[in-house]
Figure 1 (cartoon, one colour):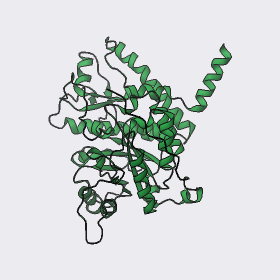
Figure 2 (tube, helix red, strand yellow):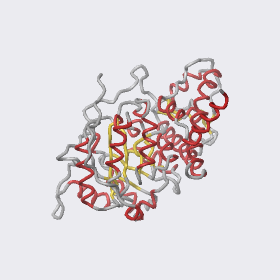
Figure 3 (cartoon, one colour):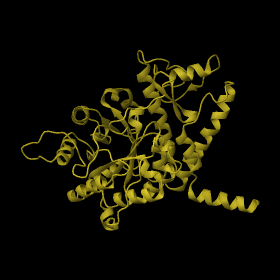
Figure 4 (cartoon, one colour):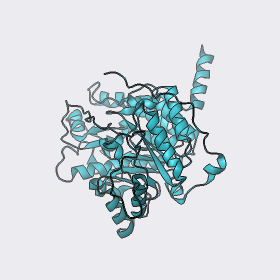
Length: 405
């Protein structure tokens, strides 16, 4: 299959907002800053809500009834942590130059613009900040991206989160990455980047992780949503906030019109379980089969509490899906607290880099312990993060290598 073409270069970009403009923060942005939210469908909200760290996390609700459920949470149940509502238009509609926000909503007596209606209904439902209903932005479509940015610039509202659901091919090379950075720097409010691509988007291109870090570092108020391990990598790199998806569907975007690719050799008959030492998700049934008669690691996360081994989630029956989801979120919250304990900047980047390197080493150790070389295979994205050393460390490593020659 041919690679998608790169975005066309544009030379008529405006200057980014000045420092004085960027200094003005909304109360909502202060609430979100430094947090890793959990992106979840309303149908699975009950699985994870009780396991969130109220001081460091929050929710991004998805689904047809996300607005209604958000209102219930906020105004009837008294939920007071950060809460976002993702219109997720990008799942089914592509952004166009003449229609970058293709949101289907009935006009009201006072509003008939889909963008403004989407923002208003989120605010009315108690969202911490409102998210734009942006269509999916294909890799070559700089015109639609510019149209979306220009429309949000007209709003002149730094409390609006500009959703940038972009194909991961934008991060393939330096030129396209710099172009994306230039567009996003036009906006003074928060930018929620979401990456599109099958399976593991950041594992698709050799430089995608490096370019994502560049994007986070160079775009003020950049956030990364609907993602997986990259939620921690982005926070370590200085992202304003991130959101980790509770299921594979909410850990990346499948472009409209495409069918989600899966590993057809492994039928999905059990929940996806986060294996902490390996920093990856595996089907519960797969973990049980790999270990067989060997001793499976016991999980001591806040949900499992030492009473459950990782091979316990072997089917989608009963309470196992809910238990697996609770386990996953509890582990993520533990990682989040550890990351938050490190000083922002190099210390957090070093923490993340070391954790990825250690996880890669564990694949060899665990596969040897169960006498099955290659039984567990690291995801491509983890391999990429383990190669993305903090700049200061990479410089010192190179100097050390030069001295040893």
